[in-house]
Length: 135
Length: 135
DNA sequence: CTATTTGCAAACCCTTTGCAAAAAT
DNA sequence: ATTTTTGCAAAGGGTTTGCAAATAG
Figure 1 (cartoon, rainbow over the protein chains, first blue to last red):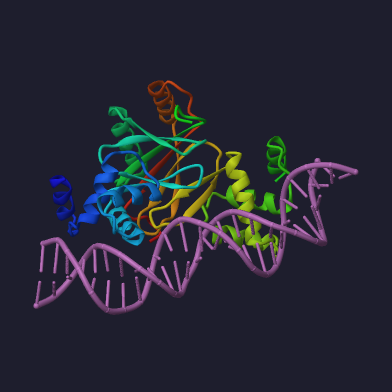
Figure 2: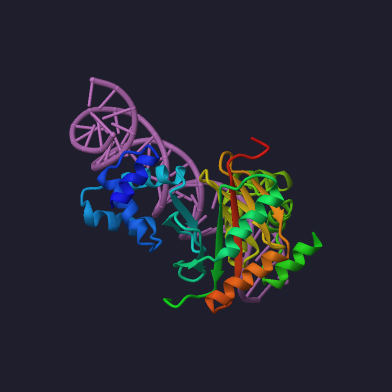
């Protein structure tokens, strides 16, 4: 909680309750769709509007605090951008699972940078599986 | 060209001129947005409709022949899914550059599979850079 | 006090759909 | 001959926008 306020301050964003709630919901790493995220934020702030959630999501994306993941079944899912990890997305139901990455991941980013000759802001890895446990 | 017809046949898709043209346009690896793709296909088939391009894109996506890449500035871009490669996307203008991958990439997929304990359909790697040469 | 953010509703625009004609196999 | 695909136009739905009121710093 207090963490999120500080995080927002570092990015010169006002720490409104709605915005904190969005971060908090994403912090659970359930990779919600917008509907799910909206519902989650509503639990804390019943009067929040969908537009506000969209606006915050865009703001947070611009700051690189939130990752938007395009799933095979068309819906976007969201995640807080914290420790680098691999998103494993199910081709069938679209659900996403995090897989913590090991050292090889950092090495991989360095390899890409070396090959490109320029620094890379971030690397997103999306692994698609045919089906997941929950579907 | 003949190649695309065959590719479509292998996937039980009818090789219509419009569909071939979509593949051909994507085969140039310019990672077009839909508008750009539509325009490109129109050059060959002036009467093609945007709906047809959308429908073909969806069909080809389902068959895993086309990759949809979510760019930081909100627009989707498309690529033929051929040899695995890394998409380097510009955070500023959204343009995408291909970076051929070396052996490490295959190894990386194997690592993920080992960690997951299940087979991975495909791995997409998206590297984001602050700005590219063309912007 | 000033700048940002919220919430509402309307607007916007991208994407999909229904259907009849055309084309592919 | 059968099945898929096309193209048009309309519908649909997700996302954004404008603006006044509320809130954060």
